[in-house]
Amino acid sequence: MTAEKQSPDEIADRLLERTDDDELVLHLEDGTELPVSIRRPLYLPSSVQEGVEGGSVRYSVLADEEAVERLELPAREGVIAAEELEVGSWTRSRVEFHERVDGEFGDLERSEELRAVS
Image (cartoon, rainbow, N blue to C red; front, top):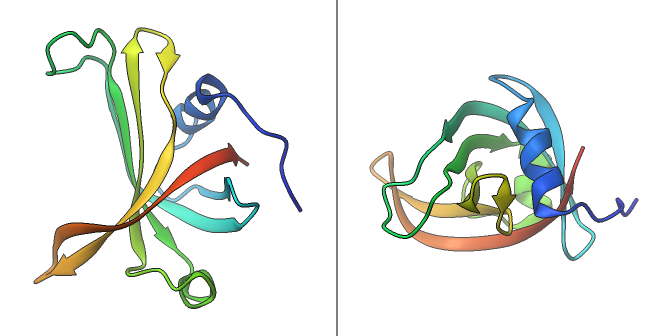
């Protein structure tokens, strides 16, 4: 089922309501649904980058095993990322999967835009 497209602000608001172990479905731009559970939510209210007034969201998530196989994901663990250019105005939200090297994140293997979060 294709979810109604949410704005970056709506996606960020929904994410900020969630916490550890919450389960959600990421609706990707291509219509794919990716069920995940939140491992570690991280909201940084202010940026360390010069010229960026807002903060950022970095949520570590785990995809279920079936989704990893079906979508050919490089790893089960991914990161939901979004940034505020100015307070209350979020940029595109995406889920990223990185190569894993000795338990550490390596190079970015796959990045998908989020259409919605439910």
